[in-house]
Length: 216
Image (cartoon, rainbow, N blue to C red; front, side, top):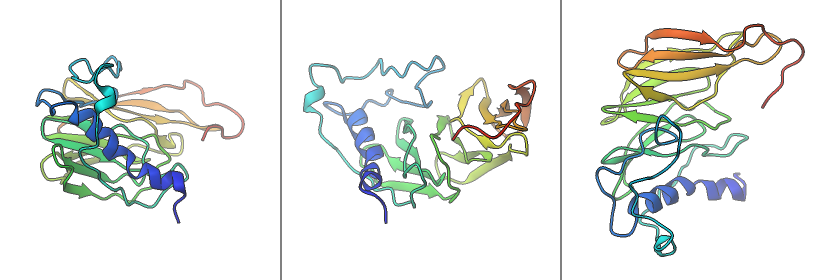
C-alpha cells in the first residue's frame, strides 16, 4: 500500500501542469516547455508566462490526472512535465510515459515500460517526437500516438545507469550514464534524434574509481 506522501505525489504532476498552463485566462499556444529545464541554458524561467506576483494567489486547479504506477523507493513521480502546443507529457518512476490533453487533462495515450527508476527522470519533446529513458535505455516515441520509434541500450558493466533527462539540440539527443566504483566509467552520449544511432560518446571518468560502490 502506498504511503501518504506517495498518494499525494500521484496528483502532483496534474496540479503543477494545470497551474502552470491554466494561468489567469488560459494558456497560449506559444507557451511551451519542451526541455526539462525549459531551455538549453537550464534557466527554468517561464519568461512568457502570464503568472506573476500579482495574480499567483488566484490560480486554481483546472484538471487533475491520477498516476497509478506502483511506487519505487523514491515514490511515483520525480520529473518535470514537458509540453508542446497541445499536450502535456509526464514520465512516472516506472518509466511509463503519459500524454495528456493540455486543456482538459484527458489521457491521449500511455506507453508503458514498467521499468522501475529511482529518479529523477524525465522527458524532452521536439517536433513530432518525445524523448526519454529508462535506467538502461534511451528511447523516442511519437508525440501523436505514443508509438516507440527507436530504443537504444546504453548501460554496461562499467556504465550502470542512465541518470539524466534528455536534452535535444540540433537534431541530436544528449543523455548520460553514471559509473559507480569499482568499475564505473560514466559517459555522455549524443544520439541522432531520428534514429537513436550513437553520433559520439564522451567518457566522463578517465580512470575507474577504486573501492566500493557509492551513490544512491
